[in-house]
Length: 357
Image (cartoon, rainbow, N blue to C red; front, side, top):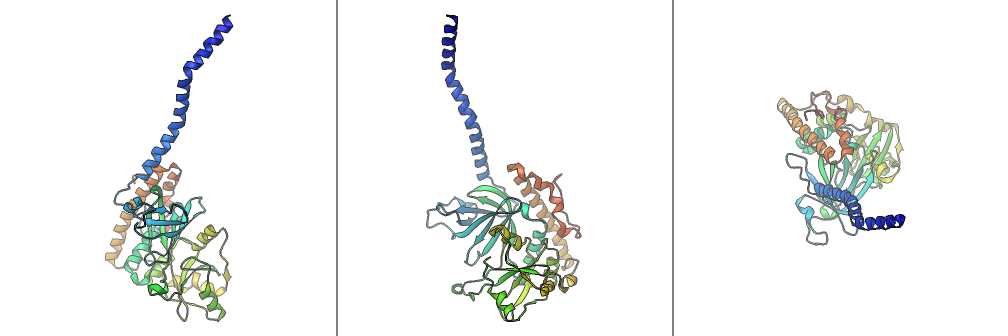
């Protein structure tokens, strides 16, 4: 009898406590979801403010993930079905880098756009070099260096972090007033050379035809600012641009990232290589010995270099701190800041550190 009453009492207790148990279970499920939703809302509404690096938003086509718009914050709220939305679509391809991060290859044939890599900060070996590149580029437009800049990247309005926008040289289509011939970007490491077009395709007609006709391209003597910059480039290889004119000529293009490494990451295997001892004239040639060791600027420009670098360093540290705040896995990047500034090691410039930054 007692056992029967105990069983009925237990059943009654279970029935009475069942709604509370369900409520607890629901809470255990909803709390993580609410946290994730809150984090998502926080990241999507994140406004880094000024001063800072430019914000770039990748807004993807609703039906094709390989098509996207590259817009600012205001235009990122556009409706993707709206034909009147600003700008035109780019071809967008994501890939994994050596660090395991996602990078992007963006391509467009339109004037003012072109071919661009978005490389995560973890895969940029020197964080001081992009400043030097931009400093030289701004003061020497005749060098025709493509745009390189840090950007705060958002994907469908969700903050991704600090990425480096690396443009390639741009060639106009015939209907836009160009020749329709694409120049080629050469990457040389020792005597080994790989080549792609300015749209990062494998069609290598210019270099192959030049070699086949026994017309080995000559290196344009680099102006002092370009030679100084190229000597400080953080890549293990030397990047050059092959002209489309006759006779074919090559000129230095000291980008802050290795295009041969990006090619392997995008395609899953290295680019086909050409080997020739004459390539050593480009990678280890006399231009390196003739490049000035001191900044090739007057005293006023040197003071401006130091002043602008201090502002740049402050913005970079702030951007890295934001990354660490929203993604603890990236906090380690802050601790590597001292190792990523070899380009300015002899210039009495310093990106600073985590403490007091």
